[in-house]
Length: 135
Image (cartoon, rainbow, N blue to C red; front, side, top):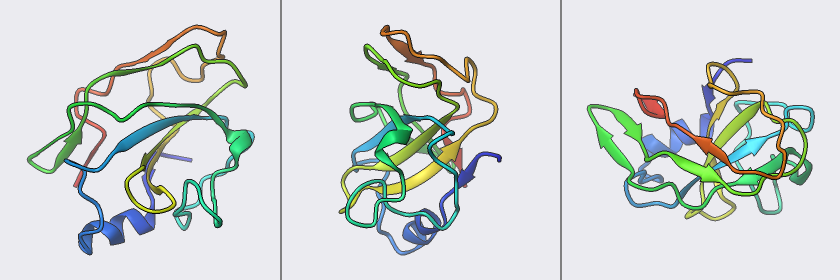
C-alpha cells in the first residue's frame, strides 16, 4: 500500500464539509494486521465504523497549530502518551468534528521510526517538513 487520501475526504473538500483550520483533527497509530486500507472507507467511528477498534493502538489529542499555506496542510509535532499494544505500521488522520469522525488520510510508507512496537512509553511524532498533505 502507499499513502493515500480517502475518497470521501476528497469529495468533502470539494463540498466544503471539512475545515482543516478549525476542525478537530486527530491522528491514530494503526496495527495493519487489523486494518486494511480502502479508499472507499469513510467513517472512523459510528455505526458504519470502517476502522476496527482492534486496529487502533493509540489516538492523539487534537493536533495543534493547524495551518494551510500554498495548498499544504500542516500541524505541530505531537506525542502519543504511554502507548501499549501491537506493533503498528500506519497512521490515520481523521476529523473528530464531523459526525462519525470522518477519515482523511492513510500513511504507511515513508514514516520515520515505523513500524513501531509500543513499550508503555511515549511515541513522539515529528510531522514531515512538507506537512501532512498537499493539494
